Length: 384
Ligand code: DNO
Image (cartoon, rainbow, N blue to C red):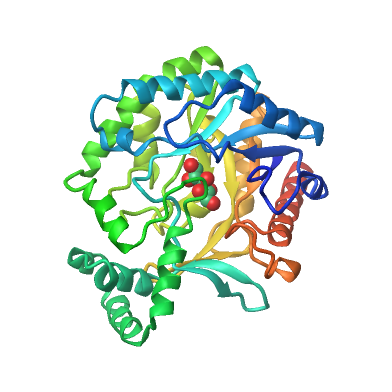
């Protein structure tokens, strides 16, 4: 597997020479400065690629080439947006960057309620607390239908949280929930979020699936011609959220997507953290089943609670059998000669990470620890 590291570009507080010291050889990045739906210009890609290569890395994966919300909503004439997506893929391929990650989550990306939940032996992690999410939906957004989606215990805790919360607590919660939009410009306030949600009113899972299939039909043939491998990132958490449908959450969803356009260019980012938050997902079995279409692996662990809460565990702790997942990818590589890029996805804030102000989930020491542990698993498995 190719050890890689997510770098947010020239404004990332973690520099390329620092990343070199982690041992990673691949860089995962995007042109975060370009608005969703616009073409990524060839010269801007070339300049970023040159910077990465000068530091001794390969740009192994684009994460992400985002999909405009209008495509997800299936709204209006989309021909220009599809053409722009194809052009960005072509410009990337012309620079030798051919693995492209994206997601199909309406409006939000990953969602957490706490960005700095304490870890037992020190440090902090990202956490999704069902009760806080319920409080946000019911009392801050006023989405009464959300009541049906939470356990009675979570609802009770939500009411108590809301009664006791200060204005600051509520702002912090809103900020945490909005933090999963790494490349996006939009950070909604409550009024803005309500308006944005109205844009999705009436759109169900089947509609979203149809819009997704249409997107794949529009771009996968071009990806094939260009030698580009697209890889969809699963939903995080893998369930409907804020009343928005989600359609990349379990094995059945992935099967639908891979068959919607049955081509190696239409692949998967196997994210153990996202998929692992659904207790019904058997990750080692899914890794075996989908390894042949996996173009990128995000490796991290989660620990789940019965009420739907979960938190990010250390990479080899938590509920997912990480060695069993990695073994599936190593077997795929041995059988095909392919090399699948992996990255330590998220890490705890540890030691000097605290107060450093890196992107939530993307600290230096925590990810360095994660990468080192994953590297150890790979070395061990390869010497069986
Ligand atoms: C979270 C990331 C996701 C991912 C996008 C891909 O840390 O893995 O935000 O980049 O969903 O489009």
